[in-house]
Length: 143
Image (cartoon, rainbow, N blue to C red; front, side, top):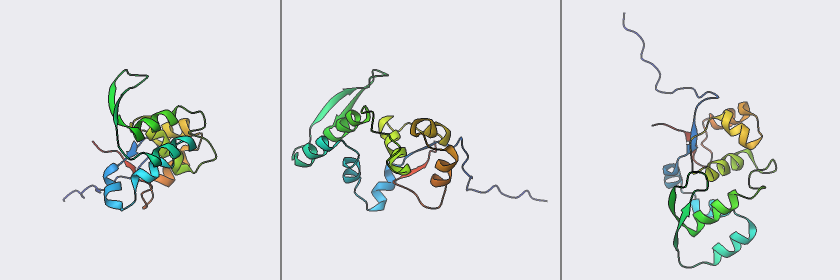
């Protein structure tokens, strides 16, 4: 008797790690830059929408000391992420999760970990992210 093949689809759990899959954005036809700008503070948005020339700057991660090259949008996101209202209960669940990934340099996190940072229920996060629809490129992380 031959053993049945395991399903290629693994059902996500509360410990499944998620991240922003930027390749999803490339395929989706949605404008990532516009969506990223929507997460900035109003004064940052106004300034960035008027910039014609992109500059790259060195950014030193405050926790790790690692140096990254960021464009002005990336730097603005890191600045906005430090604001106490960046992740708050008044924005949508998906936006809140997306902002956590923006703030942590897209380090994969589980629904349990996302719940700690968003103040939302882990079970609701799992239910939202594990459905058939992919929200803003947030997908299970695979090595």
